[in-house]
Length: 365
Image (cartoon, rainbow, N blue to C red):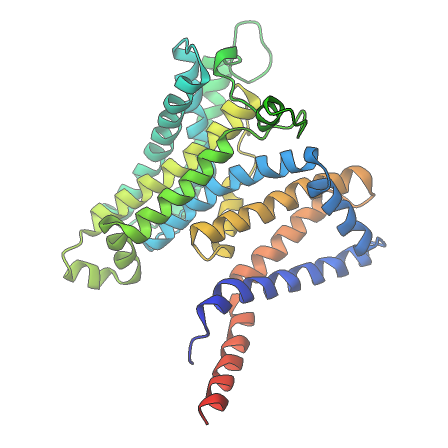
């Protein structure tokens, strides 16, 4: 089968998959006696119809960019990192320890340190599964899933027994010092006389995520290491023949992947909660898998897919608030998006390939 044009693979196939996912979602909404048009209107207005909605949509988008990039980097090395949830949780612990251990005088100094702490803890949490895969042949999917549960249990123990302030019943760390609080985008807009996104959690971590997209693109497609990662992911035997060490690439790719997942904590722990709490990740590690798949494992695609899931998260919350449609329905929509863009990708791709092949033959005739 002849391959279709690149633009069709990157844009048209996911777009058709999205349309199919939303069409079936509309049928589900009809089945429970609600109007799909009204539901879509509530979601769009709630997520994009005001600066308040935009603030929350961009906050969720930031989380999903980090976890999507984490899955993407591992994927290019032929590794399926399912451990973003645990790596992001451990990244939160790293951020909290850095911010609680040092009396930082200003957020501009605290931010780089928190980024290093979050990335280091996320990378270290990915190191053991990487080593087990590279040296012992343990499947990365199994070990990273197991480490998600270990991370949750470890974080629970640390918060309850070590970081919880004396006299507090809340399983959370102490609040970070005021000078370490990251500027919200609403505060930045207000400095220019614009009232935007008041009381929303979107903060300067969004710009860190955008820079991460650029750096990951440079790494994967404009560096020798990136070439080695892609070569290893395409053919392990070919990479070995070319002198590329499987152990080295497996470990490095997973360290970078874990570091990106850990960086998410800068947004949700340092930027939003301003302390470490239980379940701060809120499933973003698993959403990152769908983001990477839908974004065709390219940073630009990850950015766009992260925005879509940010829209779904915020719009779904508004849907549950202002209609009788249950919040769980948004999980159904997300599942359908994942199903069509991931598991059923060939259902859309193969007819398109046949269509473009037929057009090419007709043009050549």
